[in-house]
Amino acid sequence: MKIVLEALETSDFPVIRDWMDPEVFPIFHHPVDDAQLERLLTKIEGDRPTDLGYRICAGDDREMVGLTHAILNWNNRLAHIGQIVIGDPARRGQGIGCEALRQLLRICFEEHRLHRAQVFVDEDNRPAIRCYQKAGFQIEGLMREARKSADRYISWHSMSILDREWRGG
Image (cartoon, rainbow, N blue to C red; front, top):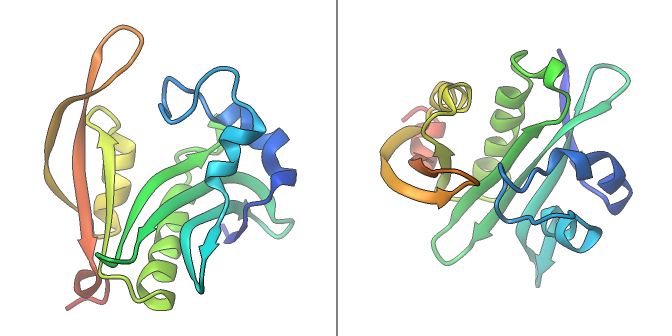
């Protein structure tokens, strides 16, 4: 399936609002409003982006099926991937998120010449961990009970990939 990343826009908010469950994405709270969703947009300071926000479009009709967002730290030349979301559960498990991740990494490493990309993944999110590993990410460690959900604490795997690993060297 053909996947394309396009700039996320405020006109996408009515579609993505329901995808942003605060139990899964603790940067949000109920009710998720436009002010919260603005965090996902691409932002530029000076001549460099500080955030990269993309909608994930699939197929020839470029239907929006998800989104991805990363925060860039230029002092350390790193991207922290905050979200890769496939909105429709029926579209999950088809490799869309993995392809979107590969495209996001190409943007980070080839277009912006960053050194490192990192992500924190819930330790029980096996599909996401496999996707990141397929893209070349390595597990660096476990952040024990790093986030509180409604009824329990959740531990995160810290995962990363370096530019030379992305390039195959």
